[in-house]
Image 1 (cartoon, rainbow over the protein chains, first blue to last red):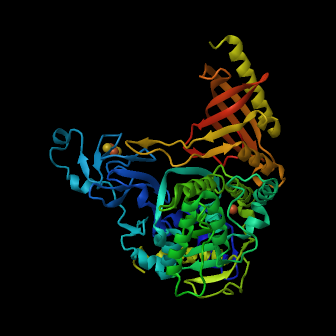
Image 2 (tube, rainbow over the protein chains, first blue to last red):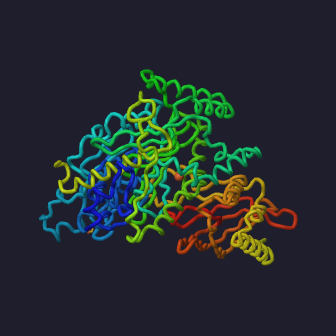
Image 3 (cartoon, rainbow over the protein chains, first blue to last red):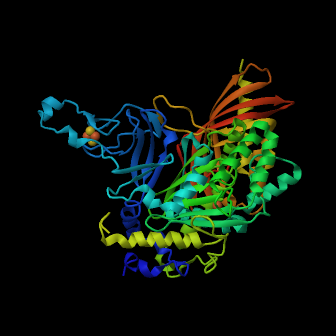
Length: 456
Length: 162
Ligand code: FES
Ligand SMILES: [Fe+2]
């Protein structure tokens, strides 16, 4: 009896009971590299990170290092960062601009389309018998640009990105994540990275829907500081962070059909945050006020047909490992996080920051400060999340204690009790419905194991 | 001219400052900062060719933000510091330079900080600091500190000071 063969029983997402074994078992980990990371569309970056030909950023797809670049014909490509000769890494930088990548082992050189440009001493040693066309860098067979967000998949037969995401997920991504109606996003260069204990799924499930932990325990020290400093009139950005305990918030759930689910936490349906943003903008000047009104108007146009008019949401995750944070307010920078698997018991967070392109400089500056003062490796929020994962690993790593499942029972049976004029499902918040959806889809991918990619 | 006495004085200040951190006397430590102080930890990266600088640092605190970090850990609910980290700050390679201003010196130092928590959670932090120290009355105060960590991927979240 292996954990892998028992998945159908021990991942009982319908009852909200999931065995911790799936976070610690080596075989499960190895299989999910193929079945989850090998078959899903994975986010690899944003087009604004690579503005001119030759620009690139390094990233990972699961455990595979990749280079995301813009070639000289302005096409975005995702290359596997592995020399075709004998597997050496060819790009050693976090980001850069270049016309070629030269391998340090035998000096094979590759161009921006992955093509093998040069081989040292090719004529005397290979005598014209090396067919260079066959020996370029491997390129991801499926690459898509969705409103600026770049996805790639190892699966040559991956469904079109629109199909994978589905209409509901696309609607939320386009309008509320990528800010398409309000002029799109601008990337701040640089990966902010930290190692963190815990399987990548523990942090993914946290982002997809765990708003319970925020107020119940994990982040209350930050909330205490907010109260104390507000009382004393110490108004620094992490203290005047957008939030108000009076408003009503909902959990959003979309997708999970053909492609991975998207979960959104703390969707705001009233205008409380809009009013709050307006007030703050007044302190920044007329240009800021105008922008807050303008983006609100543009958003309203997208929502004319809808009874419910969302303004924002706080946190989210697109399956499998693309985390979202800070979409709550126009005064908050947008955190995009990737949770890269690093063995059963560790993951690496790769985070980048974006702001709304058309926002005035004063708003951009404030928004960015709130990113690195908050859900960031040196902020007042993220380190407490990491602490939980550290403790979970310590207490749950032994298979002696895997019998008892983790509990995901919040709002079980009540998940649909929300207004339903929006794409996907809008339910009560906090909830663990999105965690259940996460494991439902994860299980589906793990159980498609017996069929080769694209042949279902 | 930077005299032997001046360098010895600055080194003594830095060593005593480090002692405050290792003894968890954070409010005393914060009192060493001027009201207009800045505490910056830039993002370190390996970049190639003609690209712009990082869009934002890891930390850019003023004194009130430093206070917020200290207050957070004093709530008794700041899980990342429960139990609080044991730290040992080793400060070395101190170089003192004069500045344009007669009451300020620029100090460069290297550090190794070992952080230990719970049973086995451990991190080693290594890097260099650039400080501006200001003479205020009989003592030094820190008016600017830039901490350059020699790492592009942090070993854990930062909940301690350098
Ligand atoms: S491994 Fe790259 S040139 Fe040989
Ligand atoms: Fe959290």
